Image (cartoon, rainbow, N blue to C red; front, top):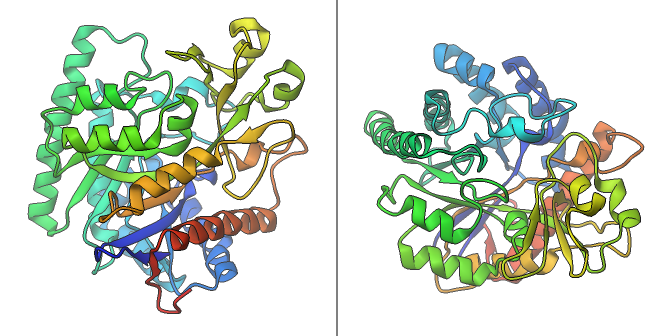
Length: 386
């Protein structure tokens, strides 16, 4: 979906394909026909934006074979899909039975992370629509916080310098600007906006910024407007935003939260306070790791249009304030926004949704995002005007 901000910015909205399991190019191409095109049809759009997740083996295959990139380009065009952003946070295996801490490997102290990210940027330079101003790639916030000795921190900082140089080379070669956004997340080296600002100060703002995930903001009990002002004052761009909601328990009890303590993904949990009390996964919190005297928020991406089991709620208020801060002002603070509900396969204890139900759910999320952006004054920029 495309929207026009009143400052003239073309805002691209997409959904992230890391909800689908695919570790090879054939699997990615199959997703386009099985899920992405039906979502576009459901929304009655000429063109649907997709934020591709290309696992390391897929990125390797595409960078080694230009014909493979052309095959992907043709398939996207055939199905009415466009790509302006990639999610390069997961490296591989993101829909395995158990992911947990594996999603943070390799980290930015490992040369493999830099190589993968630049490969994704090169691929994106070939996939960008001709009229797109730039592309974006999101990545992990350096590493999980432990272990993180000084030598690994220094290696990661050097890697970001090499990243900026590599992105500049890609732009000079292909004429397309690609920016990379580090995505602050609870439990990581960069958990808060302030930590992201401290780490990114001095990096190239034309190449490197943040990916602002509204679920992560909510879990950390951060105010979106304060976060955006902090980033703006530091000169750090919002390369892209991920629209998502966290799980909120106003009066946390084990019985209400236990259905969400599933084994695949890490569900960092915070209890309101200054600073918030923290545990690394929901089962720890339920087992007594948090006192339960104040509200909890859980890193559990919930559909934008849905509601969890009462008395639990979702952090739609944080999402709304973030969207307002990004788009209600005199200028757009980002031009890429992506729905990233990768938890669809584990939302229901009866099992993953059918392909048809998943298409309907993703379309409903994008419809909710479309309604929110229109309410903020953005205008449709798709050819059908919807």
